[in-house]
Image 1: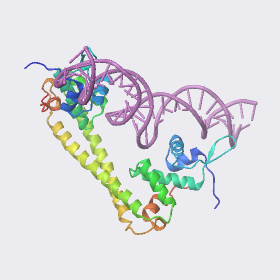
Image 2 (image 1 turned 90 degrees about the horizontal axis):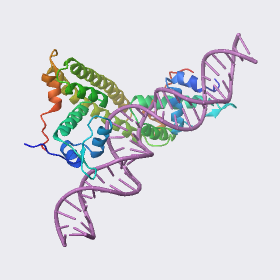
Image 3 (image 1 turned 180 degrees about the vertical axis):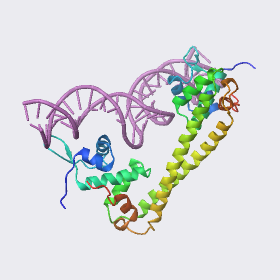
Image 4 (image 1 turned 90 degrees about the vertical axis):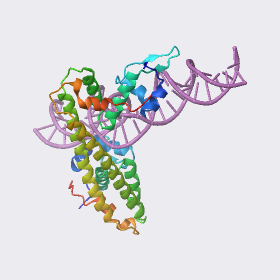
Length: 140
Length: 140
DNA sequence: GATCAACCCTATAGTGGCTATAGGGTCAAA
DNA sequence: TTTGACCCTATAGCCACTATAGGGTTGATC
């Protein structure tokens, strides 16, 4: 099984990533500068493809590019300890849980707001607008 | 009770909004251009403060500035029907629920990922890195 | 009236993670 | 050689702010 070379379009289709995004990752230093054809087209190796898949999977899990940069650095040093990786995952999990909590609070506020309006009325007596408008607890 | 005038700093403190943000809302047309002192300082009325509070409450509920623009327009025409307002709220509620669903999926993926690593090991045999790295289902 | 700190002004650029556009060049098959 | 699909770079835009630079105003105190 020889190592094949792929154009950016092939890589894009194979990974579900847009070509512009791949170039962006390269510019950000997440992907190494690939080989080029005489005409300047990028030629990616299988290793490049694997690295890109790693990035995309991590992004899907909500990691920032900065996080992914660290994860990649760790992944490249196979003698490093697992602890940092573990910590990053735990941290991300906590961040996600925090976001869920805040969204749930939002959800119930919006439910209440929606329930206050039965429709058919006019703005003048709209409870939603009323409740967004005040009462102004802020005394200036 | 006379209408008082407030500097941007007073308004900022009263509404929990940074002065730069207030100026930004003005530039975006969400707040009207306020009165000015001879020296050019902004002077806000109580109506301005109420409008800003409306904006901030709506933002806290996750509405975009574009949504808020519509809500403000509706709120200003007290003879308009409630339906549009109601629809906006329902739409926002759906958006929030969608985000919660996606975050919950993320949460459980991250839980699995975290559970796969017991710590103490080295990257070379780290299940997390392994699982982010592959198996490459994408056959190129 | 001078001084001072606290406040305010505008304008511009940066954040993250892309996406869109303009204006071109390359490649491979027919 | 022509066509059409593909690729290149560079720049600007998206959202909702935030940060910074470089200055001017205000009002209380001396």
